[in-house]
Amino acid sequence: MKPDVFRARRRWTARALCACLVAVSSGCSDDATPPEPPPNLDAGTDAGTDAGDDMDAGSDAGTQGSDGPADQGPDFPHEVGDPASGQQVFRFETFGNEGFWTNALRLPEGIVAAGLTPKQALMAGLSVDVEALDPATQQAVAAELAAQGTDGPLLNDPETTLKLLNANAVLGVVVKDTNGDGVLDVASGDQVGVSCALCHAITDGSVLAIPEGGSVGKRIDGPTPHTLNVGAILALAANSRAYYPLTQVKLTANGDTSIGRAPSEMGLTEASTEEEVDAYLSNPNYYPIGSFDDAPDGTGAPQHIAPFFRTDLAAPFGTPGDVARLENFNNLVYTVLLDPTSLVTEGGRMFLMALGGEAAGQEMADDYLQILQETGVIGPGGVVGEGFPYVTASTMGTPGDEAFPVGRRVDEQKLRDLNAYTDSLQAPKAMGFDAAAAMRGKEVFRTGSCVQCHNVDPNRRVPSFIVPMNQLLANYTPVILAERPVQLPFRPMAFDPIQNDVSTIFDDKTVVVDASRRGQPRGSAMPLLLDLARKPNFLHDSSVASLDALLDPSRGPAAPHAFYVADAAQRMDVVEFLKSLDTTP
Image (cartoon, rainbow, N blue to C red; front, side, top):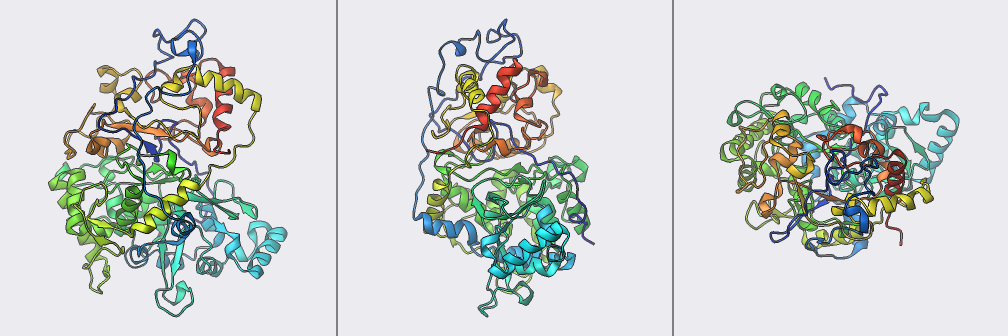
């Protein structure tokens, strides 16, 4: 029986990365040299001051001011096409992944079996584009909300959920006319796939906004839906075991241990039951709200979903900056992450072996194929356990190459069109900040250590170097590292050579997948400092609840991103400055 993850209202805490560590980020090329780490302003170093270690006083960085690092790193250009066509790709293109979501994961079956209501879907962070609904439905919803709020019959009727799906009104959940009758109807056998918009679009909430949930209104493409409960949505599927490679996996080749946010002994195996997989996915401590696991490496480290606007400023991509070009990143998403059945192919096996070593990679592929066979998953050719993947892509290239991670590539023109569209999307206009405080905060920001890594101007592409992991730990010493839990002594590292291996867990994802395949150090890359007012939590483990807390020296010198503004008034000014940033001309 599926966990009742949508029934009760709960206080969900959306998780986010710190200002230096987000999923759409930037890295450096082989010949780029990362800057020295910003001085630790809370540790009594020369960078500290008698004025309370403020960022704008006493240090060499604070005497002249700067608009960003002197070395911005290399550019990573990408191909662009037609943004109008790219909008359709972003919103509705699945490249055939409806086969996975319908036949393997069986999400529509799970939605029907659970009797999912629109209210429950909204509570899980899904959003509805009101302009996709016919006028009669719009009027009925508006009238019901006015009279009964969210307790009326329409929002609590599972049949309404199916009507919303059939109208392609649920952002990123795409119904395809796979039975060829010219009518979109999930109940009659049409299949459901997933597009970019599931994780990278919101609405303006003009009709309805659920606190800590989704909304109904006009769609806004690009921003992160911070309250999207991806794990609970996956757990709703009738065969969540088919998501095995993107969970926290326990492999014999790795000593029957696992890595991730769940305890090691709770790692999943090919023998794990549907209930056990659902328990992992629906636990926000293991699969945080607002996150998505972006690497099929068996590590249970979902990363907070990154925004997908102004992608012309954000290259390279992936938390550790391991993908240089935008079209390659999008191809990875469609050929692997949204249809992981590609991992049981020859190219997929080569990719897994590159991620975790030969023994672990082959074991994961074998275990996954066993799950697909045991759960009766029918491949595209009509045979159980054969003919994968479902994604429509050309077989080409060398598996493991950035452009062809599993030896497959989706339509090149659509990738270029998608690039053009996401490049054109602006960050949400900043509102609700103190303009005078923001101007003061800008000076604190530009005369302190922030500009050793970040640009003042948000319309300038982010510096494209990677900050090595040992620099993210401000007081990097062997003693501090020894005090941190070492969870990966047994895990083979196939990216050869792995650079800057400090053998510590700061972020699980950068331990297993890192930029070394581009010849870069292990670490994280620079983010877009945009739309920060909407972000509810910071740091990879979401342990910091606000920008103010992130910059507060009470977190201590050994904390991740230990770069602080000690003066409380100046700290709040910097917060207002960060909240004021957008890409409005």
